[in-house]
Image 1 (spheres, rainbow, N blue to C red):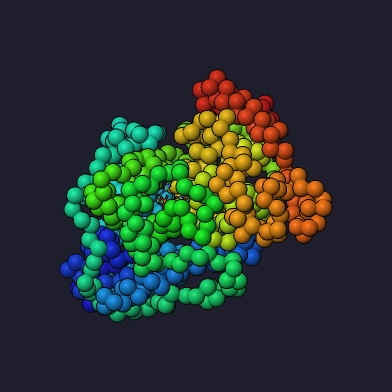
Image 2: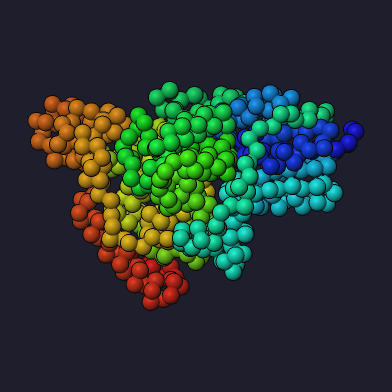
Amino acid sequence: MASGSNSLMWFRKGLRIHDNPALEYAAKGSDFLYPVFVIDPHYMEPDPNAFSPGSKLAGLNRIRFLLESLEDLDLNLKKLGSRLLVLRGEPGEVLCRCLKEWSIKKLCFEFDTEPYYRALDDKVKKYATSAGIEIFSPVSHTLFNPADIIQKNGGRPPLSYQSFVKLAGEPSWASSLVSTELSWLPSVGSLGNCAISEVPSIKELGYEETQEDDRTPFKGGESEGLRRLRESIANKEWVANFEKPKGDPSSFLKPATTVLSPYLKFGCLSSRYFYQCIQDVQRNVKRHTAPPVSLLGQLLWRDFFYTVAFSTPNFDQMKENRICKQIPWKNDEGLLGAWRDARTGFPWIDAIMVQLRKWGWMHHLARHCVACFLTRGDLFVHWEKGRDVFERLLIDSDWSINNANWLWLSCSSFFYQYNRIYSPISFGKKYDPNGNFIRHFLPILKDMPREYIYEPWTAPLSIQVKAKCIIGKDYPKPVVDHDLASKECKQMLHEAYELNKRLNGKVSEEDLKSLR
Ligand code: FAD
């Protein structure tokens, strides 16, 4: 096969045309360009034993979101005279085969900080280097290069948001606009013996389609991500006054935040372009909020967590994670199952868990409430167990951000005020006294009178009969007494913190057993 100057653009995240430096570089001076996405069976094949429809690693909502994003990418590539080449198999092996078959001279892909991609990329880079292939792997998933921040901090990650922001400063690219348009791409060359397909449907992957009611309302893809972004920033006053954690977590018809996280997760939306759009709004208003609470501040949270996750060994576990407090969490499958399957008997908690299963997205404070409840607030179950459930069901599931927030919410790292607990009864009531959020996601409680909607077990039997919801039969009794459970949790945390202090963080499994 004629080799000319063939390039391969390997899409993983970064499923977009706009602000995609790897794609731009791949196109430059190339006779032929091969835009590739590899479907990894490990990630995409149905797992009949999983607790919800989906593969071993991802729920069906996220798989669907990814397929929609790939379809959109294919469409956008076609508009530029190209197309997406979909292949299946172990990504490292498939890619090396393609590099050989298509006589590739230039391999381009976005740099990724996650351990899974770092191991995969090392393997592919080793092969490419030995074959004399040029590699271009720019940082474009985050605002900053985490390695730069860590270097500025003497080789260690900053462990507070404030120190991160100080070190990071203004991104170097912020004063010149990132590229938002490509007008043309080189065509795809001969495909040789590589088995290429179109983007498969859910059914073609071997899944039964779920009912409409169980599908996330958020559609994947760059086009939808950009449309949502434009819709959000069109409301300049809203952007200027954005202030988290203010905002109503129970507002589901019109979420209180942008719902751009799934688009950022898959890179359908560039965080750098998002940043510049917010900056543009801020320049044109008299006053605006500032980090950490502003919208721009939210993007900095994302980069902060990416930086810490990138440079902390064993970031996704308690053991041998030097920034994580060692706590004697319970291993209670019954309580975990009740939480995961929305059967805790606390309607606010259960409704959020139904939203997670059906939508794959919840408001930030809603995530706070259920994560606190599972861990240090009530059930004292290990944060890694809750992390796994989120990791599977969220459509924005992101290795760095998810782990970081579970560390935070369980008071294992970053945040240590374990006496501050979210009440599973009064917190939601503050925002939504009528319980509309609960009525929507838990229709079994839709006729429960307002005064009992957050504590239906306190309703007299006659009221339960009238509401067609008998507690203990149609809807569970609470799995714990919140006042008692939260008191016990605080005590356990207190003892664990003392132990961590006494042993200077070097806590063994035996030491933890002594607290159980
Ligand atoms: P907006 O408020 O509109 O913010 C814009 C963007 O800023 C978000 O899309 C996100 O990329 C970023 N951002 C906002 N808040 C945070 C935060 N606390 N940490 C890091 N980045 C942030 N977010 C994920 O993207 N993936 C996850 O897997 C994830 N897991 C979480 C687990 C727990 C236990 C908790 C408490 C939070 C988690 N978050 C996660 C963070 C946060 O809840 C979501 O990013 C946010 O709710 C997404 O909604 P949005 O796009 O409307 O956010």
